[in-house]
Length: 347
Image (cartoon, rainbow, N blue to C red; front, side, top):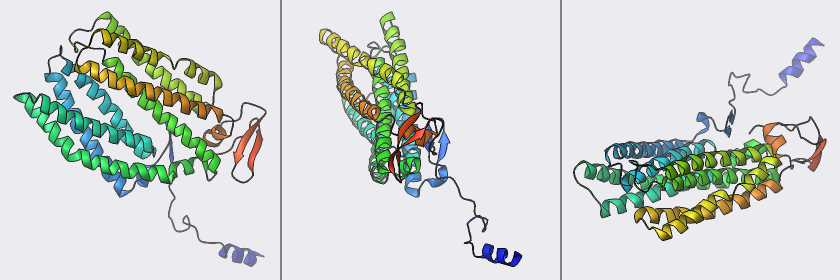
């Protein structure tokens, strides 16, 4: 009997554990969701991360130098702060785009680099400055001209890879196509929320018409309320999708009108008092802000309509709120789970 048991064990296939090779998780769980470990990055992704982060760090250093040296009561001071805000967002897009395989956020980085390249070229042609100011502007222009095209090409290639492969989505919800499509909509809406917050912050800071030297009561109120609203609104949307909470969803949708209302007010105000370059920038940001807010609203509605299809149970391992709930199963299609049960998975 013992010999038979030994023979049976000898017939088992050799595993990696038997050879002393430990397997590593394909994903890691973080407070912002499922992300890839460092060891999973390819050589191309490491190259993109290195060049992109060096580019943004260089731009950050020159921007901080510009904020320190520029006269605080000019429009240049406002634009320097605006550039600093967008550098922070772009840095987040680089890291989250790669480790979260967010194709749209990598594309946002590419667009940001292209806009920065145009801004540096136009700014230097219009006003090259003199002395230390000229050195800073010229250095910034040379850096963005050298690294910018490389960032754009690598970013476009990697974004296409993420969009076509959907590897992280597969590792998040499994092979079920229906759940993959729902998860794709959720990821898209999350990215749009971040873009919306970036534009909201930009519009709020553009209220500082006279630079940083003098900030009146109206500007302080807009800055305080605008920043608070933008952060709270994006948190409402994120939590509503993550936990499929209908109460938070309605709160999110019912407060969506506030930013467009401010944009309309600001455009009317600009018609009465045009302020040159700042006003032109506000018009451009307002145009994209309205389009983006409409896109967020539309995609969120699509996500909301898919509440209760099993995504929350699959990726968060959260029990259903109802006694029975419809779930998409890779083997049998649609089914139900009882309250207290959950489908395994990580997000």
